[in-house]
Length: 161
Length: 321
Image (tube, rainbow over the protein chains, first blue to last red):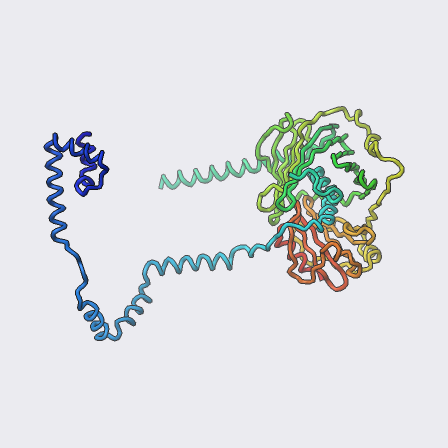
């Protein structure tokens, strides 16, 4: 293991997050490398300072009382906030309004809603077949497939894939 | 200022090139389509059809001598088309159905052909042409035309959402001398004898005559998609219950059709076919290339089949009194 590899692992090594085998390799390197050992020492000293000074944070016991008393002193506090928001809406509100306008515009100006279409009952096939037979007069009609549809009313299920 | 001039010039050049290439592809497609094939040919085709969400496939033998055409299906159905009529021979029922040719409803002004590329079908070099409606979002066609003979080697019918609803393609084709396929070869299939029954189509092409024959007042739709014109009025056996008469009003825009079947509500045909629907918002169903709906108006049942989007079909149904 070289210095670069140890440098990447040293933070995890200092808090014991490495596996035994990797940790042993780092230890072996640190025993023989002054630079990396001093880096570890510096890191451990910083960590100890942080742990000592953070302690366990808790909110002050009188926090809620002070907040509620401030609200009670300013009866228009909530209303003013609302008014301010109304005249100067946050970005989310603007984005929402733009999105809503776009959707509304698409609904009003866009194509009419699609008519639901279901697969035809085979009972309709005689009409579809007759229509297909009559359509073979059309220009560039695919007479083979139209004739096939027309023939299927008398031979249902032929060669189904 | 100089940069702006260069930019504008570039835009103009690109736009002009694009317009010219579009025009060239249209001219090329129109030229290819105007050469009506006069050669004779025979071959095998494969056809695929979407019915609802199911795909059905068949093979067929096609022979053509420039005027007459014969399509032989493996299920015993043979269709012979002549300039005057189309005869369908059904082996299972030993019936011959004759339909006279309709009007010549070819309205090239409604459609725009466009050459989109080249391809090879059944070993023949083909030009690929898209044919799209100028009005609305009707189904479109893509055809592969043999560059030498003008024969359509492959056809795809696409719905308004560009989904292929049916396709037919030559898997093998042989060009032969017209003399080798004489008209007499298309008189009738070899297996047809005198015991076959002919069901003749009585094409009235007259609404008053059709009303009298069917016994109901025939109402025409007030709303039709752009480009569609009346292509025929038939009185024919009801496709569902052949002992009853039905009026078949057909509109075409040259490439796609709208079929309106009107019949008396007195007979129970509609009930047996499950086609009765009293509401104006009848269910619209997909079948093959077409959409289908049925409505009941006063004393008659109406069934509409059309190769158009469901919304257009709904408008037609609602516009019939």
